[in-house]
Length: 77
Image (cartoon, rainbow, N blue to C red; front, top):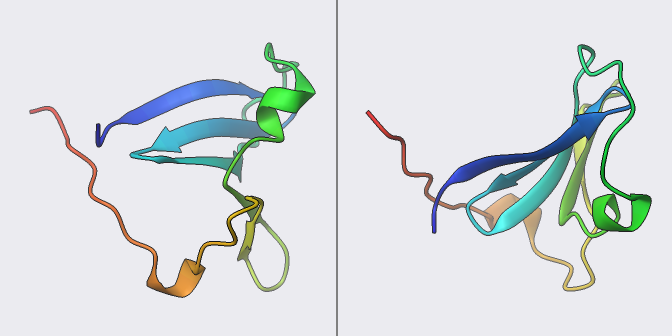
């Protein structure tokens, strides 16, 4: 399915699913502790690192090509 799902949030981050990919992004509003265990978070495909370069890191074992990665998300109206 090509849906968006917020899986968990906390510790200034959110764990989200966009279509087939699970990602971790910063979320300054998520000041609480996350509910899921660390090993669930570690399964994310990608992690967005906010630094001077604002970059995505491939966290998966499959080493996807981030430059050519795309997917479609269905939006309910």
